[in-house]
Length: 171
Image (cartoon, rainbow, N blue to C red):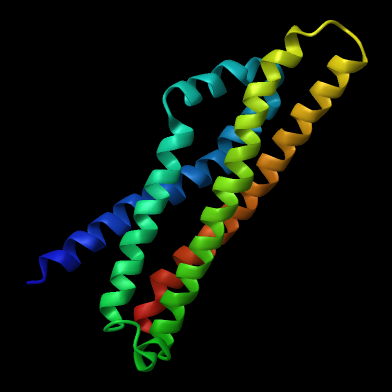
């Protein structure tokens, strides 16, 4: 029994389920609810910030990816071209690349835009009525839209990742 392989698979699958499930929840339920609430949704986002959601999710995603790379390394016997050229190897590789792209977009576009909007939103609300406040509120709205659009892209990439991983061994 290969305990390292079992541990890597458990880490990869359990954390991957959390990562993907969370992103699907965000895109399917949280973002539409926040949009419907408008400014009244800000306290919920502040709670997520205080509970370190925006730090925890990237760490979980990164651990999922690191475990996946280790699994790929072991399955491929050190990235041998022969195994990587099989259909299973290509499917796992494609899923891995898609997850890396999703991670980069998630951290550097979705997360970044959300954190900027969370920082600017309260400041904009406290500004006196006028052109400066209006410009700040437009910037907050643009950041929220950028975060939502990138979240949908991340969800799509992760769905394709899951499909690739689910079918790889059967190709």
